[in-house]
Length: 120
Image (tube, rainbow, N blue to C red; front, side, top):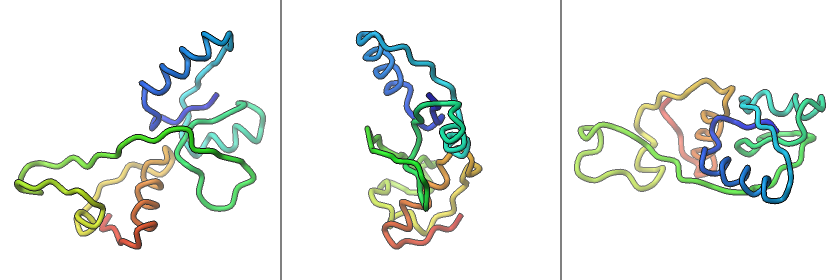
């Protein structure tokens, strides 16, 4: 099973514990989101855990859990009132990681889905 580094360790541990109780053997391989699709298509892995695929794909996906996404900044950036919505931070500058792991793509999608523009 390919697993994006964006999947929480707590979720992975719980999944492995349930598999063990059920008598299943799972082998997790950390993979970037960009590598999971080709590995599935080639038969290298049977399943992948990653952020939702976007765009046209022959792969099927289903949401199995969600977790909060945090913005982290120094106190001067937001003052006494931390942001509570995407529109509160849309005008801020962002430093995003490369697209291969899937986080940058997921963050961009969140903003697009709310019709907000980012200042990357």
